[in-house]
Length: 417
Ligand code: GLU
Image (cartoon, rainbow, N blue to C red; front, side):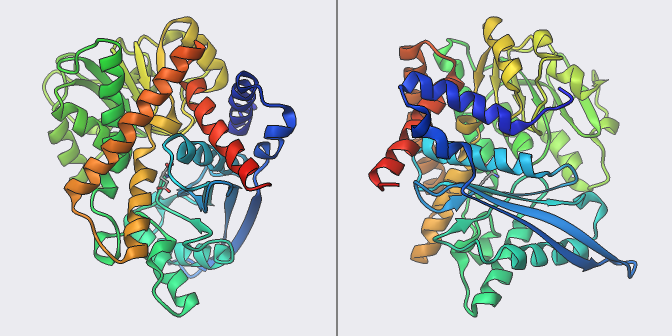
């Protein structure tokens, strides 16, 4: 635990899937290393007049199936192993849903909550300049992740465009709609989580209506997932964010909570009140007696210290890497079904792909069209993972990696790499 390294998790699952696929070490040797890693640093003049140097990373794990694709994380705990793991997960995520990308990820070590709008703008611009040699619509396409927003994607697009001397919309996805963003992109990851949750409940013969749900994390992904599943009739009994969590055994009023949180950035979930609410910690939320648990925050939330205490029947991973390899084994032995991150949260990158396609063609699709096309990718991808896991008697995570690794290895072979 103390030495938790998310990249070790990636390697462990990769090895397991490769063995089932009958691949030799040399077949997957290259996938164990990122193709390219860049570490950057740049000075920023802060609002108080001082100069501070910020550090960031851009990692391209694989470009075998297409340009590298993946978000940029703005968080104080960003580090190179985390970005490497997140980049590898993007490779397998894009492969499992069959979109023509490899995997990449970026990160800047900073705490956006403590930065002014001007400071954040400067950091985003300088980071873009620093990674500019690596990115481009045919090379590597950043997007939002934890701590980054649509506005920041707009600034990245502008900075890259200024360097090129022309507007290059397709260099970044998740932009504001007015400057080339796709309708439906903001909700896409949560919408994909909603489709996936309904799919798994359906396979397990559990009704959607009235089934209890707890969501850890009320950022973009957690809040949209909670909202859409609430609208589908699930009983959302608990939600949390970094300030703490709230629980109501009779179900929370999700629209009222989201309204409260969006009204003012200073509104804390831990201070929200409504009849019947009990305040709980993030740890307590994970251990609640609910049917479905959606971790939608950071990595390493379900690990060997708490996996044994998880009571949910189903975990749908909206976050990247919320469950460690050790926890996976414990959960599997308890019969808890885990729908893995690379499948469950792929909705975001799928609609990023749609955004990129629209940018390259200078057209825009309706939101209805985007949502329908997203469902057309998420549902068959889920079914394929379910089927292969059944055929091989594996967990859904291993099933997803069986599909993903095969696609990446085949691409490398066909390209003669
Ligand atoms: N950051 C998101 C993810 O982890 C989206 C990446 C993208 O759209 O490129 O999947």
